[in-house]
Length: 259
Figure (cartoon, rainbow, N blue to C red):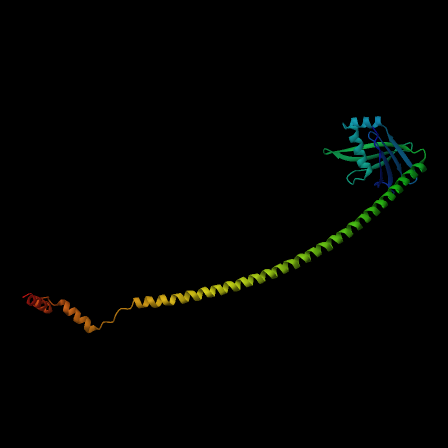
């Protein structure tokens, strides 16, 4: 199994008690780490061995990997809520410290750094790393810029195509609406003609019916004198004298014929 490549960080640390910042270069392994620190003139180093890291992690009841990851987190980027220090520890040594909170408790980690046997070489190594990182960042910026430009061109093409499709859709809908409107108006005109025709037929059919109904309801005219005469005749008593004599004459003739 191949050992994973170590990580590299470089922190520009601005201390409250110092006017000039210091640079902390970190090389991070799975169970240990190395620090190279320079202020531009002097340099210090710290080699945290696996045994030292394991002892420190045991003191804080942490796994080794978690201890290394937390140290990388605070020495890879400066945290504004952490109090950093780089104080003298005697004999040219320095003590690098930083604070953090865990479960509501403020804790402080400190590591003693010894003077570099070759300050110029250590400082040059830090500067080389910064230059390489700057070149890498510049190349990354160029790649991101080119990628952005390509995306911008593609976005403009998509926007132009979208506008074209929108215009075609509007033209299509306008043409369809115009055709539909023409058909609708034609149907309305035919419906109006049919309605007028039906209305005329209904009017023409009602006139004969009304005339027939009026003729059936008309009563014959009777004058007042005729009505009074009829009523007086109805009131008179009926007698034998009132029977028409034509009936008796008819019987006499029949008898004479028999004789």
